[in-house]
Image (cartoon, rainbow, N blue to C red; front, top):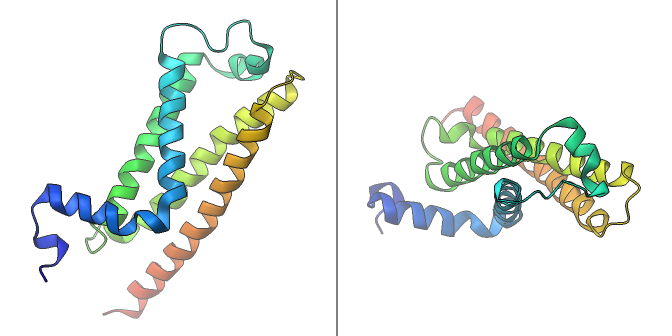
Length: 160
C-alpha cells in the first residue's frame, strides 16, 4: 500500500483528516463552532446590541473584534488539525500536538469569556447551559493534546 505522503495532495489531505478525525472529533467540531460563532458576529445586524446577555462582552471589545478573533482562532485550530492528521511525519508535524493544545487553550479563552459574560450579566439565557460545556470539552482537549505533545517530545528525545 502506498503511504499517504506519496499520494496527490488532495487525496493526502482527505486521508489524513479521515484517518485522524475519530480521535479529534470534538476538536474539529469545536473549531467549526468557533468559526461559525465568529461568522455570525460579522453578519449584518447586531447580535450584542440591546441584549443584556452580551453586555459584558460588548464592554470588552466590539462585536466585529470578537467575530474576527473567533474566526482567527477557529481557522488556526483547523489548520493545526489538518497538519496533525496529514503531515504528522514532517518537521512541522512534530509540533502539531503542541499547537493543538495552544489552539484548545485559546478556544477555552473565548468559551470562558462568553460563559463569564453571560453569568455576570444576570440575564436569563440558555447559553449558560451550553458555553460552559464547550469550555469543559476544550479543557479536556488541552489535557489530551498535552499528553500527545509529551509523547511526541519523548519519541523525539529517544530518537529513531
